[in-house]
Length: 81
Image (tube, rainbow, N blue to C red; front, side, top):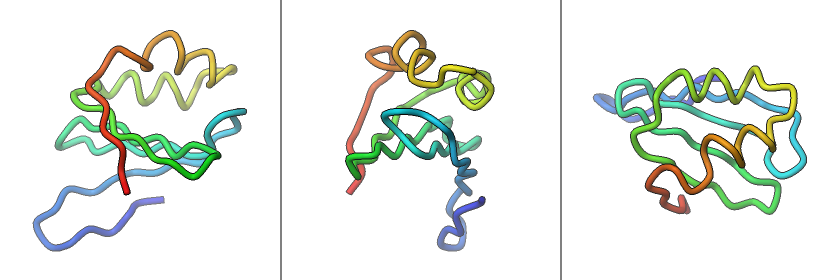
């Protein structure tokens, strides 16, 4: 799924995932931002994430473990309202 943005804003590509703690992930190629929507309804934005980390997260058989090992606490993180 691609989230439509205002004119001139970069697109965010969203994918549903099968994970225990989150249910979808999004990535903006232009800004290198990774978005993770957690099951508790919070969404976090991770800054300067290489595209291969987004692809690795989507492809990982254990997405929660991949997140814990390669993403959590490794990138500047901001909550999204």
